[in-house]
Length: 113
Length: 114
Image (cartoon, rainbow over all chains, first blue to last red; front, top):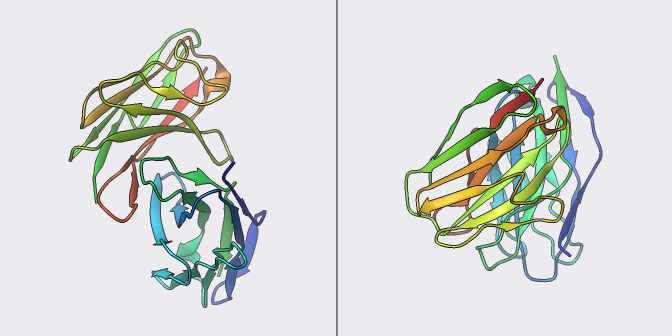
């Protein structure tokens, strides 16, 4: 079945450090890929998405590129801030659109000043 | 994208009781999805609710424990029945709101069973 594997956390970085959170997927169809963020005590917010190969999603300084050849969608940010401390979830949906998201296990990021 | 109002936002319940969680969407949607997020864990799909038919439950979740209603295209409820401390989790609803596969989530219901 469809699945998402993302790097284990927690990840602790100093402010202004470079962030990479790895995400790879297995899908029978041609999925859309997502990154969601969950700030402490809050629900899930869509951070960025990509719907086809080589698409780059970007938002709030975060980027991720849909790499079909490596079945990956790694999240990157050039300079993290304390306010980026949250749990990040990689997710996929097969392209029919009426199917639920499949989530990775989440990666907790802590950014220290 | 769609906006979801989910309530209650949190509750503390006695074991053996039931809690009903509501999600109201500001637009008509075909599918609504209910997830559980246990402490420190990822989201697990409980069921998919389609208006006018019974919900489809994932392995490990049964209708007697998590009955779902979907009376119209903008509203759904999930009931957590006969609760035990193991049911303490965050419960979230989600819809596919708008084009281009944008999934929106409710703000979640943080349930503690004592």
